[in-house]
Structure formats: C-alpha cells, structure tokens
Length: 72
Image (tube, rainbow, N blue to C red):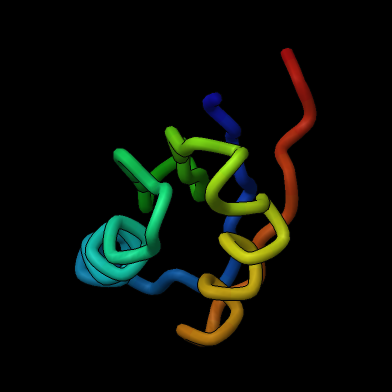
C-alpha cells in the first residue's frame, strides 16, 4: 500500500534524507520518498506488518510532524 504524508518541520534536503533512511528501517516499509520542497513523504509499506500510525510516530520521533495528506 502507498500513503502520502504531509510533513512539517523539515529545514533542508538532509531532513528529507533522514526521514527516508529511518522509515525504510521499519519492518514492513519497502520504500520512503520524501520531498523537502513539497513537504511530503510517500511511503510504500505492507499494512499487515506495519501500521500508518507507527510510521507517523517514527517521523515524530525524528522531530517532525506528519499526517495523512489529503487525496487529490
């Protein structure tokens, strides 16, 4: 499953890389792609192994806020 997250608190591209690296370490997350410019993260994950709440909590643990992005 793929989920877009709106992420706030990033200050540079290094913040985006940190989020990607940390999320991809979570069991069940296949890929994370964060855009500093768009202030968004797209996460591809196996929802039978990891819940979106845990992914959001991991982003918060890193010092940023995240919430599901509205569908377009």
